[in-house]
Image (tube, rainbow over all chains, first blue to last red; front, side, top):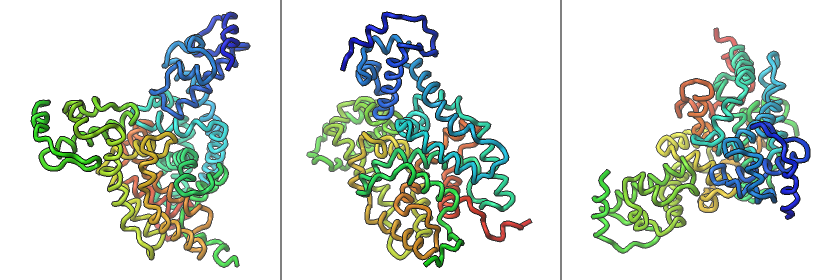
Length: 230
Length: 230
C-alpha cells in the first residue's frame, strides 16, 4: 500500500476545529481512517483497537490518525456523530404520529435492514459497545436515541392494544427493543446461523420478512385463506 | 481478603488431568476462580481478561489460576464444559418430539429465562463471544449446540405451518434464533432499557411473558373476547 501519498497531503495543513472534519483533499484519508476504525471496532471491539491498527488497516501512518483525531474520545465522538447518528436518523425520521403501529414497524424494520446493509459493521458494534454494560459507545449513543420517535411508536402500540386491535400481551416499550434487537441480532448472526445449520446465509431481505412476519403475526394461526389453499 | 489460606491448600497437590477439575478441598477455590472468570468475561470480554485479573477478583493468587488452569484454552474449555453446557442442557433436554411448537417455545423461553437468572453473566458473553465473528468461545460452543433438539423444534414449527395451524411467514429455523436472541437480548439489555427510558428494570418474569406473547401471538388483533371486555 502506498503510504507516502497521504503523508504528502498533510503538508497542506488546514486549521481544524475538534469534531469538524477537515474538508477537501484531506477528506478521503480521514474517511478511510473512520471506515477502518468502524471495521476494527466490529471485529475486535473498541478497547482492543489501537490508533496504530486503524492507521495500518487504512494504509496510512499513525501520525495521520493523530492528525485527524485528538484522542480516542474524539475518534469515538466522530464515529457516533458521522456514522451512527445518520443511520439512527435514517431509520427514525419518517416516524410521525398518525400512522398505525403496524405501518410504523414495517417501515422501521425495512429501513434498519437497509441501513445495516450499507453499514455491516453496525450490529456487532451495537451489541458489544452500546447494549453491553461498560460498552464504550454506550453513553455517547444513549444521548442520540430519538426518544420522541420511540414514544410515537410505543404510543401507537399501546393505543392499538387498548382498542383491542392488537393483542395486549406484549409490552409497548419493550417491543421497540424486541424489534431493533431482532434486526441487529439476525443480521449480526447470519454467518453464525449459516455455519451452525449448514444453510446458506439468509439475505437481509429474508431476515427482514421473517422479523416483520414474527412481530406482526407471531406464531398464531393465520386465520386467513391460507388454511385450505391447496 | 485472605490470600494465604488457599495457597496453603495447594500444598496438598493432587494429580490433575486436563479438563477434570480437582475435587475435594481444592474445589472451592477452583469454583471461585471459574465464577470470577465468567463475571470478568461478561464485563470485559475474554480477550481483555488476564489470569491475574481473574485471580485478583477471586481473592486468590495468579499461581492458583495456573495451578488449576493450564492456559487460556484450558480455562475456556472448563467454562464451556462446566458453566455453559449444563445451561444449554437444562434448556433443551426436555424438548422431545410430539409436543406442539407452542408448548416447546413456552418451555424453552421459561427455562432459558430461569437459567440466565441463575447465570446473569451469560447473555453478554453469549452475544460477544459466541455470536460475534471472532468470538473466543464460538467454536467451543458451536460443538455443544443441541442440533437434534433444535431440529425437533423447527420441525414442529414447519409441520404446524403446513397444516395452517400457525402462520407461514416466519422461517422455522430462523425462529429458533429469534427466540433465543430475544431472551438473551432483553435480559442483557434490561439495565440499558431502564437507563434509556427511565423505567424500572423489567424483571425476568416480565421479559419472559413479553417474549412468549410476542412469539406466539405477535402484534395481530387478539380476536378473543378481550375486544369488548369493558
